Image 1 (cartoon, rainbow, N blue to C red):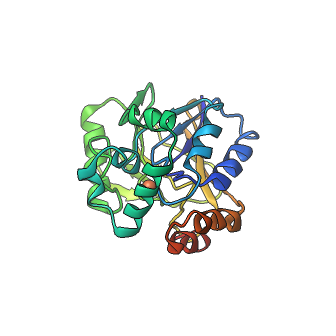
Image 2 (image 1 turned 90 degrees about the horizontal axis):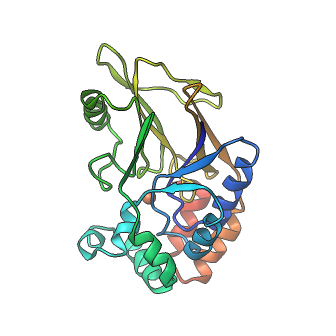
Length: 246
Ligand SMILES: [Fe+2]
């Protein structure tokens, strides 16, 4: 099965439209959304409307969960919190209900998926010790070779080989064949707020039969997304960072 892996859309309609348009040429059967449909950007209702017609497995991200959880929301920085409050005020009731019922993880035949880690939507996998911990758990449970995750808004391909070595594999524009005896932690980057200094909307295509991952990105109308943020009265920094990919 060819599967689109998307994450951290964060209400960026222009970025999502560009990714869905690019996916028409990818021959994917479905998409896997690793969470954070809302927050930061100004079009959460429009993004949720658009995804209704698309075959997607959705997971809950920490921003989706914080809509309903004051304790979780209090740990957000001021700008993220302001955007969250805006979302609570503007999301349509049917979308709130949809977001309220999202699962934290998804397990299929050849992968597990989560927002942060399989045990916490709030935990980041950014550093070696964090990748090592999740990959060790994956190996111990002996269920899946691949774990998809998001949350950091940065692409990553962590691997653990048969000798227990854990490292980051270089990501190129070419398709990457995965090794059948390794375990992998794969982050496709963010659709709606990339933070690896490339403003393009990021996604990836996973081929389960071939056992490969292809990291991709697509340009979108950043200026229009920025304009929507400013028009909505959200913090101007949220518009600025889209142009910088931070
Ligand atoms: Fe996020």
